[in-house]
Image 1 (cartoon, helix red, strand yellow):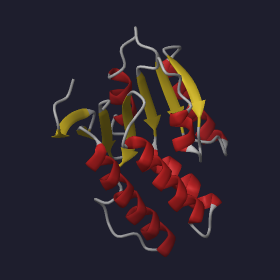
Image 2 (spheres, rainbow, N blue to C red; image 1 turned 90 degrees about the horizontal axis):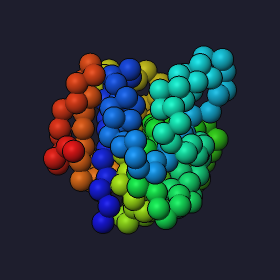
Image 3 (cartoon, one colour; image 1 turned 60 degrees about the horizontal axis):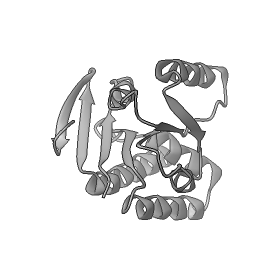
Image 4 (cartoon, rainbow, N blue to C red; image 1 turned 180 degrees about the vertical axis):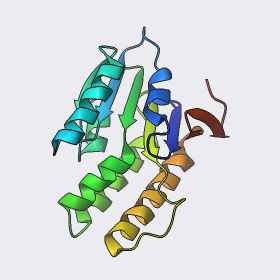
Length: 175
């Protein structure tokens, strides 16, 4: 089975930069982006991320169908970075009021991760360490993100928690 790493932490903690540091420039790398540019601010974030990774990655955009995107990587791909699971989850919640698509997509993702096609690094936000959100939608998102992160962490060989740009090993041996 290929090695899987989950990189988690708070907003602007350095998760994406750390994930990119795990890529070897000589490898065939794929970056699966889950964000959509729905406004100017998000487009600026996407632009910064694209500049940071440069031309070291083939980029696949997968705001909804993440498992399908993972299945589509070419056989000689050595590393896939998925950034980010919580953005993907938010996309699904916004697009699917019944949560049927969300549940199906999460099941599909977890099934693919039982036998990943290559080394994989997942970036996600830890959203459960703050105050309890004031509204139902925010609490639902926080809970679902926590369950998703737990499921992916259980399958991952490595889990790294980033605090202020400093990686802390939670599970496994890094590099």
